[in-house]
Amino acid sequence: MAKIYLFFAVLTISWMTVVISGLRRGEDAVKVEFPPSTSTSFPRMVMVPSLPRLLEFTLCLRLKIESSANVENFIISYAIGSGSDSNEILLTANMNAPVNITLRVVNNLAVLQCPGLTRGVWHDVCVTWSSATGRVELVVDEGFCSNQVNGIATGMSVRAGGVLVVGQEQDTLGGGFDSTQNLVGDITQLMLWNEVLTSSQIFRVGSCLNKECKSLPCCAEKENTGNVINWLQTKFEYYDGAKTSSTQICK
Image (tube, rainbow, N blue to C red; front, side):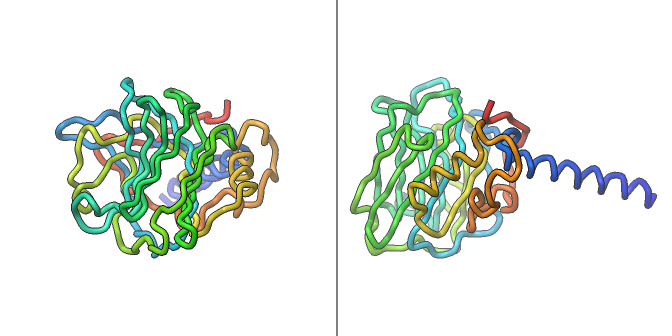
């Protein structure tokens, strides 16, 4: 029995080593797939810990939208309480012309146009927000698409203790889902920092994982792992058909 246990332990460790080294090389990764929602099924992942209070942040992920229609895809919803003003952070991608990314911070909306965002293609997406300046910035694909808006939730803070859901929009805390307010597609490399990264740091996050980064050491660990959400370490729970699988995001 001890030998069998040791075999599976070694197998598990070996798998984790492959995934971690692959993420650094930019060759292999684990993605989460979000199929379409129905009236009774709402595919999502829910962060087990909550977020701390945030006065600024940088949120980055790799995103592939697979919805067949030109609709708004709800990527991340972080909410406290219930009602239309409960979302402290709400990130969406609207595939209707003009194509844009929207970020709602403490119920203040920033609309950031990005015509280069297309369905069926992996995109690097980073958004930043600062309470001190009220500035929201968007960078897609290392600057292929970039935009900024000022005056968003200036002097305010994102409150701690809420529920973070990926793939659905919350109308009640941890629930109240609508089958038309969801994400159809895949994500990977979801990271959150409690600071505003500089443009060069954001570009570095993307380049650390792109196809030109072939060999170790590529980047320092801290350069491509968030200090609030770390894709490899932060615990999420999966519901209603959201599932993980391997992917070749840089091929």
